[in-house]
Amino acid sequence: MPKVLISDKMDPKAAQIFRERGVEVDEITGKTPEELKAIIGEYDGLAIRSSTRVTREILDAATNLKVVGRAGIGVDNVDIPSASAKGVVVMNTPFGNSITTAEHAIALMFALARDLPEADKSTQAGKWEKNRFMGVEVTGKTLGLIGAGNIGSIVADRALGLRMKVIAYDPFLTPERALEMGVEKMNLDDLLLRADFITLHTPLTDQTRNILSAENLAKTKKGVRIINCARGGLIDEAALKAGLESGHIGGAALDVFQTEPAKEHALFGTPNFISTPHLGASTTEAQVNVAIQVAEQMADFLVSGGVTNALNVPSLSAEEAPRLKPYMALAEKLGSLVGQLAHGEIARVSIHSEGAAAELNQKPIVSAVLAGFLRVHSDTVNMVNAPFLAKERGMEVREVRNEKEGDYHTLLRVSVKTDAGERSVAGTLFSNAQPRLVELFGIKVEADLIGHMLYVVNEDAPGFIGRLGTTLGEAGVNIGTFHLGRREAGGEAVLLLSVDDKVTPELIAKVRALPGVKTAMALTF
Ligand SMILES: NC(=O)C1=CN([C@@H]2O[C@H](COP(=O)(O)OP(=O)(O)OC[C@H]3O[C@@H](n4cnc5c(N)ncnc54)[C@H](O)[C@@H]3O)[C@@H](O)[C@H]2O)C=CC1
Ligand SMILES: O=C(O)C(=O)COP(=O)(O)O
Image (tube, rainbow, N blue to C red; front, side, top):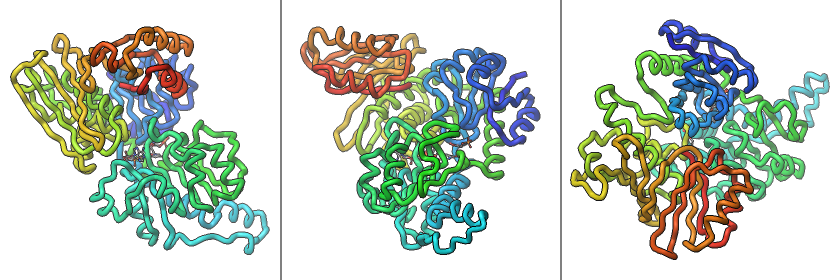
């Protein structure tokens, strides 16, 4: 009988469903990472919310683990590249708590507009300070949404009902969808300049981390009120405190913090600051939804192999599985690679299959490319919703087959057209099983796309590799594999290195400073 550990507080419906489906379940919450490490080896499944951090160390100790189920949306507490490397499926419940979280953002907006927590405190202290509290109306005010996905859209809908003007910054919001939502799409600088209230609804990714930096906070309208029900790392907390103290920022309400649980924090006690302890998803309705969904998905997977809402594997029928599976892994990796490297508005993604690949069902391959590609910008993408999301975002998806073999007996090529031009990557399968990159932006380079990687483009010159190796060594970074390609001798060269740990922004800055380096980026697979 498969065995699941529920390691964060979850509605009892989850355990009930596991038992009804023939899955043994233990509920042990509040463990330290060391304690979790000591017991995780017993379990086939781990059901979590945001408190449990599923790190590489935990995954290394999880020798029987097959699936991690997140009863909620954000998966930034799960090391997905390490889970993928270990063959552990990671799934979430993309919609079960979105209404509840949107409602919390609206609640915090009102709490800020009328200073409700302070007014409550003063009244219950017997002060009756009627003249101290002077609020603002939200009617007619401008709400700036950063991130207009599932939760952002619901917030927009509720805010429009409150007669607010809603403006949005989201690079993936199409003009058609903005029109449908009744919001005005704009760039971040314009939003910062115009919004009376700003609310954040993006996942935490390398692109969104610190999106409200000190510099961006300084661009906001004086008196702006800021709400964050998404993730702590999106705001520079020290700059937010300084802005509140100077009075430039009129108020801030945080449900999430850079480090959680936030039992002590520099922001506590700052004027016009309100906080809740990551309660965005905490309603009975949302918790019942996500508990039922996560238990059903995990039980399906553990008992019958069905895959739903997985973030790192494609959904698949039993007959097609054996032949298609390695192609889908290749397709996801190529999609993810171009997704991480491409910049600007994406007009078109083309998937070319050559040789043996062209004889297969292309649908799962195309979905796998799109899932890999879009996942860079959203935690909620999976094989099922990726084609729909691509369409919604106005991306043209082109599929080309050529059954004639080229240089390889089987090849997938993924090309992306942006406003900066069209670029492509290609890969093959070694021994019909192992995904392998063979070409990157016109340069022949053979590499495994696995775990944490460093991507460098440099001018091909003697001594460069030694200098790079020394820089990594000095930073204590261990190189796993090293792949090199170049256009021609002395021309542009590409380096792809797999490393044992996450590549930090500090290391990227050091690599970028090396002579001859044109680009350096961290990649994860
Ligand atoms: N406080 C809480 O308890 C909860 C927090 N959350 C957080 O809310 C986040 C959003 O959830 P959903 O709306 O369901 O996700 P979603 O994936 O539907 O929407 C995210 C949106 O952010 C956009 N985005 C991505 N990168 C961006 C960038 N650089 N700049 C601007 N926009 C960008 C995406 O295009 C997408 O439209 C989750 O990732 C999670 O971290 C979710 C549920 C509860
Ligand atoms: O679903 C999410 O992304 C959330 O942040 C909710 O977190 P929680 O399950 O309440 O710990």
